[in-house]
Image (cartoon, rainbow, N blue to C red; front, side, top):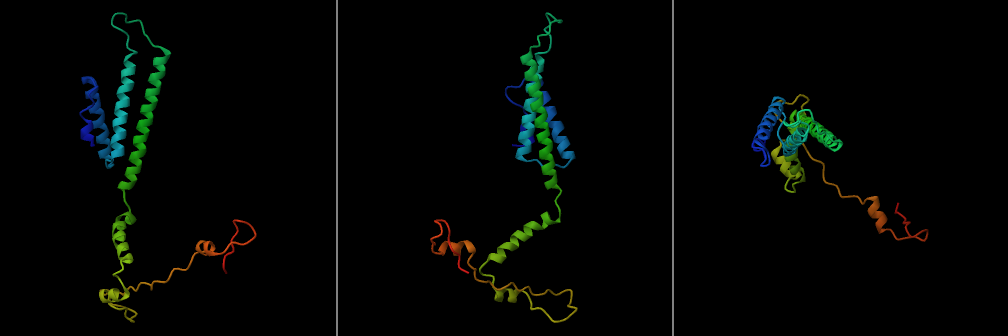
Length: 192
């Protein structure tokens, strides 16, 4: 779903509501484009929800319009006033959710150096876990380190990864292997 999909409106909308809906979606997308907020599925759904709540509140407010036959008679019931208030409150919350989503997406849009280099680090992490990469293959790729105090800036230094060490048993695994004692059913001695 995109913002362009929202421009057509819903089947239950009147022509006037479709025009209002199109104007609302166009105004919101113009604001988002001006702030350079990227579109996301969450943002699009929140804008659609806010547009539908706007129409719901406007439909309820049409009940406040006096009839043409009796222009002085307003039929405002407490239930209608409460429904209008709840619809407006929900619309306000939906607009606040749009602002919060924009702040989150905007923070992601302004990426720092760490965010830019992260994909390269992720690709390099595969090399660290690759069993084909050994000390010998690294030595073949990277020239050995020189003893010069001022190495040529055009050369690279060898990076020798540490030799893999065996896993020392953790305290939890050692405790699980220890025989139970007579102190209590849950108590176990751990080896030194």
